[in-house]
Image 1 (cartoon, rainbow, N blue to C red):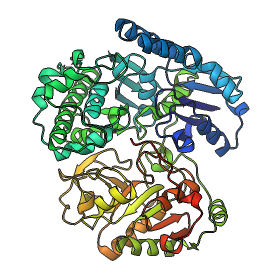
Image 2 (image 1 turned 90 degrees about the horizontal axis):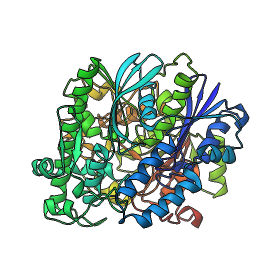
Image 3 (image 1 turned 90 degrees about the vertical axis):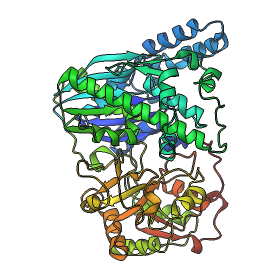
Image 4 (image 1 turned 120 degrees about the vertical axis):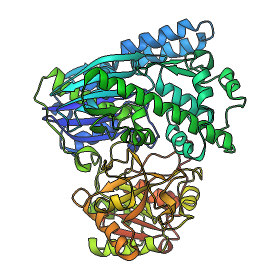
Length: 583
């Protein structure tokens, strides 16, 4: 039994394949199209899922779409009509867009894939909840989903038991925790639905001095975590902007321009809204615990990617056990949709996934050494092929000497994080490394933090991780090692840690272990293999282009290693700028 799950048409389009109840492949469309947050129908991602598993579309028994288009269309049209006459032009544009394709999902699926089988639909928050619960280790759990908006729901509480997920409480649009955070994302000069993680990264540079002002003028919430936005300060219902001049008037300062000067004021704003969001989320979760009496928690939705809030949650001890879906955003809804098909529609027995990178994250495309060598030969590059032990020793020495390494191995990660297969690696021991990688490799804002990847057996010595193993980089934890590893400990002495064991990624584990033998440090900087505005690299060609476009020193593709200094004259196709739109 083969089921494809699909999410698309809003942002972060993706597809996955479930075989006999087990998730075996998943990928975002952006990785193949090279358009960040690509929202288009995920034809390339579906093609990958089929090809990877030697299937054709005739082998697919069921396709599940992640939301119900007519319900969403009804909400959008009614919202625009309620804002008339200000929204007439937008109403016409939206109507044409939906009537042209978004309403006719079944027809698009059939036409794009030449598919003649069964197609069903889940609800958006149902897909989020299912994606989290059915990838979790729990037989029973309360599930909390928080995002901008699905069809109508913005926050939901569900109960998962055995092979069933049931939503028991929802808060509907427009009063949305996700849209609240997006509003402040825009105010601080970042792109909505793209730069929310930047707002989170900016928060530790400030102080929460505007927290009360926000609660008095922008948002309020009750004892159950139900929020009420002051809609006079927002414009998302009119479709042109998330915030308006009244929002700015509350703080007495205009919205920061994209790439404008980062003043202390905006750092304090970021810190203040982060504090508000954390309080609201904790209130929702306490209510969910009171409502259900359950001690296991599953989290999903875009807000569940706020690892700072997740880290704060660990210290509250509201739940005994917490699972955050590694792909908590809309891409992960493809997984939830597929599981709705298996567990709800077909009423099959639930198949549990292991809590491992191989089952939960390493689900994308891979390239053999033979595949890689074809690329290297095509562009007449100078390289070495090394066995694993020599490779790790060579790369660890380069890292020790302050070189920056592109690291491309095995299956591409599913979700927003680079977890050791499509990564840029650097030594955390140098104080200026963060600035160097931000400005010369990633071409992004200098304040942006980097995540440490640490050997699981050493994590408690370097980070306060007594109560969590963070394989998927979804929690921030405290550390007192800022002097030792200054480039990956943030301003508030926290870090978004990834723990790594030898079983799940033996090659990278061996590399870090080798680095530790030379430096007494079991930690590396791990950031995604891309530049600002670019999706994480998918293929060896993507990796080569990123390598030659930046000031990376070393590139590792499988067992092949390239030195920048040995390849100073290369095909211009490898160094041309892709002109990615800044996020």
